[in-house]
Length: 146
Ligand SMILES: [Zn+2]
Image (cartoon, rainbow, N blue to C red; front, side, top):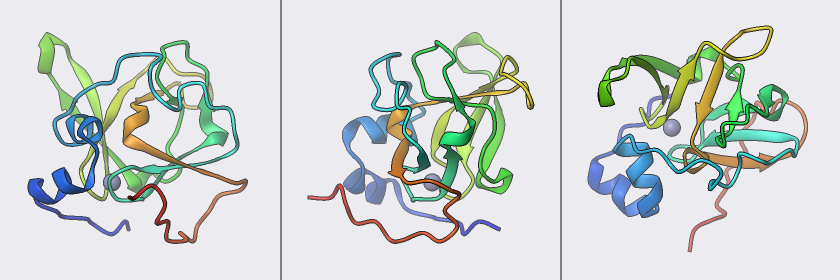
């Protein structure tokens, strides 16, 4: 089970950059090919930018050509959740962090084998932690704060 993170909008606003706040908390979308990670090919783990929960591994990242980081499976199905999203006149599936409820991106059924799914995720929703293997034990990261 993933530990739930519950913070007020004010707390999120104080912690996140304006871009991250807009995407994670207001369900925004970064412009394609502008994010930090769509073209990142390094081995490592992608964690939630809001709460640090491990979401995706470079093992399941692939080049979808969409301009957003794309994964065919989450590291742990408990760590992400999906919800029907009918905003913008489209029927889509929203992908959220299972711990802090942050908006991550959308899920599309056009991914590669073995899942056939594409988790289309905003770079701004992710924090990349370099390093091989599946990191089970989170070493508390305090980088990126000033
Ligand atoms: Zn989170």
